Amino acid sequence: MGIVKERIKNYKLLAFVILTYLTLAIFMPDKAFLSFNNSLYYVKEMITIMPVILLLTSLITAWVPKSTIEKYLGKGSGVKGAIFSFLLGSFSAGPIYAAFPVCKMLLKKGASISNIVIILSAWAVIKVPMLLNEVKFLGSEFMIIRWVLTTISIFAMAYITSKIVKRNELPIEETEHLSSANVISINKEYCIGCGLCSKISPNHFKMANKKATIISQDINANELQTVNEAIEKCPAKVIEFKSETI
Ligand code: SF4
Image: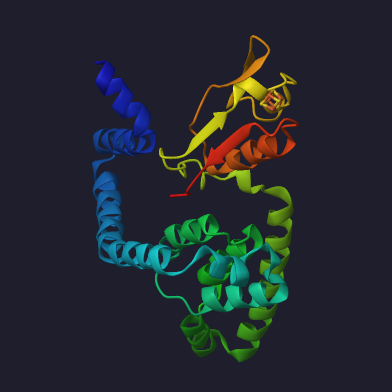
């Protein structure tokens, strides 16, 4: 029973969808059938597209260095980065859900939040082949005005989102842990017991008998900065950290 509860907890959304289908099947079987067919269509589409997208994501992860992503899509990439992101989104292919794993990978590699918003938004509403279709059905004047206004909105959204959403609030780096081969060590003999390290990085250092002690070697990417700060600020320079990011 406990295992079932745990599984339901882990797959809350799936459990909710199944429950909704069952309820619908009991009270409105025709609607349940229609809805099930629609879902089946999207699942089939996803099964066809997602392996390619995941392969592409893995290849970029393995082959494109973090420094390249940071240079062209990172916070310091400025106007060039924004234009590059806009073009990347505009010339992309595939449905918008395919963009999410790609964008998560780009974020992990150092792309800025504003550039990710631009890629996602351009991917969703400014696909170049779609613009041609838009001209065909609604005319060029309509398309140009919509394109200009949408583009302005995209850049405005990117700016506002980057001001509101902080990187450490995103679930991108939670699982990014440093290799277990990495070790923090303290030469306790020379520790003067000032307690600074435990204040700066309380998840990794604590004071015991007026000496600093390590309480965890588990450091995720968000915590790396605080550990480094503790090392830098240690007045006795007795903390060492050997690391290699995965
Ligand atoms: S900051 Fe350095 S000297 Fe101070 S308690 Fe920590 S290890 Fe010891």
